[in-house]
Image (cartoon, helix red, strand yellow):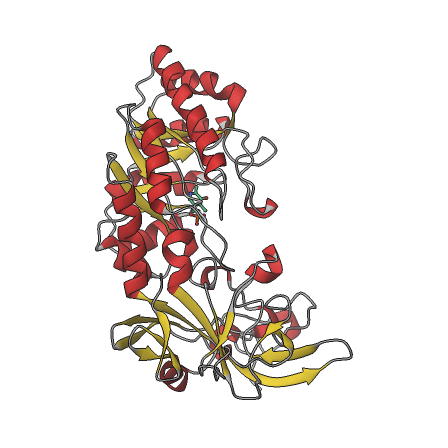
Length: 435
Ligand SMILES: *Cc1c(COP(=O)(O)O)cnc(C)c1O
C-alpha cells in the first residue's frame, strides 16, 4: 500500500499533485510520501511486536535525514554501514543506544567514532576486524558491545548482486569458524560479545531462506551457550522483499510469525534491519520526456532522468513500473495504451535504460512520467556521471511538500575541482574553471 494515486486525472503523492512539485522544483526529482514510510514502519514493527524487538531501519536504503527523522520519531533505531550514515542517524535524532554498526570494511577511525558515540552494538564481520576493534576499544578505555555476523551459507534466491549469505560472499564469519571466533572474542580486551547477527540478502521473496538461516542461528545459540557464551540478542538483518511488478511477497505478518516460531523461545532481544520494505514503495522518481525517437526495431521515450539518478535497472536488471503523471484515458475496456516504448535516459551508455519496453499511453515531449518503487536504493545510489548533478528530493505530508535536498548545480560541482598550477601558465592554481 502506498500513497501515490490518481486524483482528478493527475498522479498525486498523498494530497499533492506531482505536477505541482515538478513546476516548483523542475525535473527529475525524487518524491517520498511520509504517510507511506510511517505506515510501512508501523506494519513491520507490529508484525514483530510479539518479540522483544527493536526495528533498526537500514539507513543505506534511503539516508535522507528527513526520511530517517520520520522513522526515528516513531521509535525506529538505525542500522548503519559507515561513519557517515552514523552521523546522519544521530543528526536525525536516533539515539546512539539504538544504532547498530554493520559492514565488512569498517576502518579503525570509524570504529573509534562509533565507540565514542556509544552505539548499541557493532556487528563484526571478520577475525581481523575483531582484533582491530579490540585494540581500538582498549586504547580508548571503552568496551565494545559486539555481535558476530555469521555466514550461514544459505541461498537467498535473489539477484546475485544482493545475495550476502552464501559462503562465497564477502560477508560474515564462515560457519565452521564461528565457535572459535566467539572463543577468541571472549578472550580479547575491550570486547563484550553478546549477540549473533545474520543478514542473507535483499529483495527476498520467499520465506524459506530466512527460515533456514534463522533455524541455523537458533541451533547456534544453543551451541554457543553450551560453550559458556552469554547470547542475549539476535540481529536477524533485513532483506524482506517488496513487489516491483506485482510479485507475491511474504507479508510482514507471515515473516513475523515465522521468526516468532523459530527464535521466540530463546530469551533473546531481537533486532531487525528492514530497509527496502520501509522505503521502497514510499518513493517515486518523476521525470520529463525530452523527446521520443522511433528506432529501426524499437521506439524510445528519452527522458531527463537517467541511470545516474536510478541505477537499479542497469545494475540489477530491476523492473520499475513507469506510469504517466496524467492519468491515461480509459475507453471502458481499460487504459488506452500506445505501442511498447522503451524508456531511456540521455546518458551515453546502452545500459542507460529503465527496463524492457512496456505499454504506455501516447506520449510526447514535455509529458511527465513517474518511475515507481524508487524510494529505496534510488537517490542513495545516484552519481554525477555525465556531469549530471544529483537531483532534488522532496517529501510530502498530506497537502504539503518540502524540498529535503536541493538540486545541486553544475557550478557547485565544478567549484570542488582545481587545476594544478603547472597547467595555468604561471597564473597560480586555479580554483574555478571560468568560461
Ligand atoms: C542492506 C542491509 C540491510 C537492509 O536490507 P533490505 O533488503 O533493504 O531490507 C540490512 N542489514 C544489513 C547488514 C544490510 O547490509
